[in-house]
Image (tube, rainbow, N blue to C red; front, top):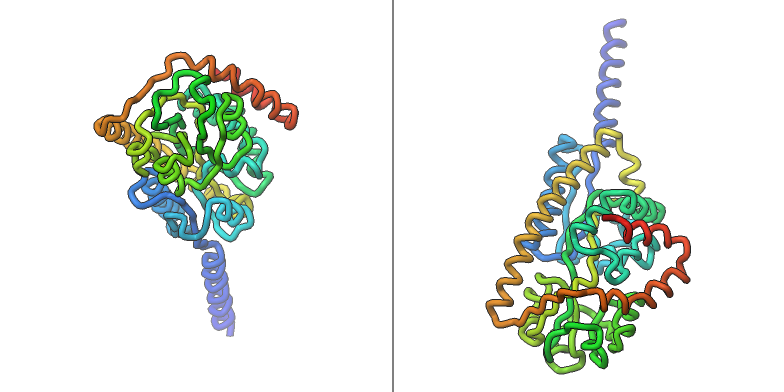
Length: 327
């Protein structure tokens, strides 16, 4: 009788242990807008592998690339609400949701890409991360998206006056439209997929983006003047649903963060290679590259954009000043 009861208790304990293990196991889904082979795609796949390795298979992540689970704004909402666990997002479309994240969309807020990462790895990055977590997103690591510069078909842009009267495609954000308007240009928000034809037909005179986007879309074929203004340096994040992350054990939280940091290191390495290759490709195709040596006139032209922004968002002045004062 005693042996039977003991065996039953042992069996019950074993079953409870197995159930607890099954409950702890998690199957996550992740979103990424980029195509196969793109630096971010490779890095997100590596993140999925590392998460499974570092948690001994207790957490698995299935990545969906190429925006197959919806647009970026939709995916951001899905991660915030928990429909998706993970996403690789640009901070541009996160800005309208998270005021702190919108600061990085201020023109010339960063001196260069290296300055951006110094900010993100310090107090400024923590302030942005805190704002994101309050909206249901936790940035686990920062990805490189390069710097955005102007390109057009009529000649190099060397000063703000060269933008006067020009129709320039921008992303749909008041800050980007204000940037072009303050230089006397006509901002033309439109979907990225429409830009090639718009440049080709003269609907717009120019656009702005990073080297890989300029090259991979063939925009250099219809806008062969690239002026290195680097006016926008907007990072991307590897983000996770706040509740999903906060519900993990400390051990699993550490493992997931480690996996994210390692994936970011890979992404930045691949991005640098892709950026260099894209520039080499377009220069080989005959694109005229104009290195803007003095960006001060462009930065001075942006002062009204900053004044308007800070008047509307006074609570963000400390973050703006912190970024500007970071060496």
